[in-house]
Image (tube, rainbow, N blue to C red):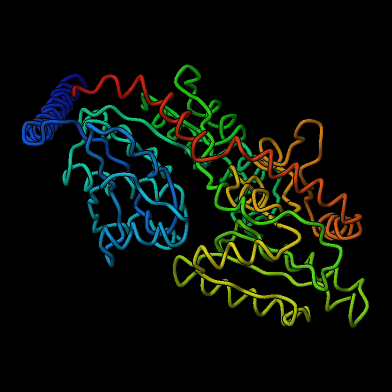
Length: 471
């Protein structure tokens, strides 16, 4: 009797699996037919970058150097034209692409918005990226697909359904062992709220959720034919999660260091007001609250009047991507009012590159407070501008950027309000000649992060994959 019941069920399962396999093969055949028809029409292969937010930041789209290949960028920025995106990159980041690029506009970017998933955000965004990737794939089937924004779950989609070669440039792992340790140790952070860290049950549940998600993330990432990471910190995490050391290499991101080299390096002992400049988007992980609170501690130890409180100011420069970021700026302004430092803190939002450069030229200290920043382009830019850099003692700044150069100091590292305040006071107390030497060391050290170095390293890493494309 049991066998009679199980046999039809087994037959049904086999039938459903066969139908599913045939459906996948049919979709793959259809997508590859579209690609072959496009190749016959264009006469050359196409490389596609997946960057849904390319109008909000830089990314990997400076890499358009092959003359006999078409380039496209999948983007979700529907309110602008392709030309406006390129103009925005030129205005904000001083980026001018060496050749034309085609944009494919995606209509369902909302599927990867964190606001859509107040709970299980990582899983929700990852599932959403699969649907967004499907839209991209059906709009245009490339020969080589490169995820340049960390949506690893799109990689198997393009590889197995689209039949594309796939590569990835990882700026920041979606999940990391550091995130797991934060939850295990029940430490409250921006991505581990108090109601979870205070609960043994919820913390245990979140650990299991993170471990299962890390397993899926590793399986998706391992589908990549080529893996590039932007720092030593990212490399360690990707190797532990994706487990593909033979296909993984470090390619530091392109930093426009040359644009800041004309800022003069001079002793600043005659400055009447020293400014501390922070460059970074107004996102929670950038921890602007820490900057303001540390700045408050410094001001509290200074007397009123010339040479004291009035001789120091904090300038927060950054972009606001959406209403959530704008609300965060309002909260930060309120914190300044609450701490009594509003008169010494300036906010510069979505500024042009020329204004960014001017503010950096006038500053004495560059400030960065993100814990486990994956790399830190803003840190590099401050050092190229000849500022005394004060960054967080973790991630890319600690491992790759604010490191000794030819035996000389290039900056300072800190990790909490007290150590940041103490470092600021120590920097300001240095003789002007000592500060100048640190600034010179810093500027010389960041040449390894230039556009030219990125171009050479990126092309070297990509060459094996590009060589597989039929020209």
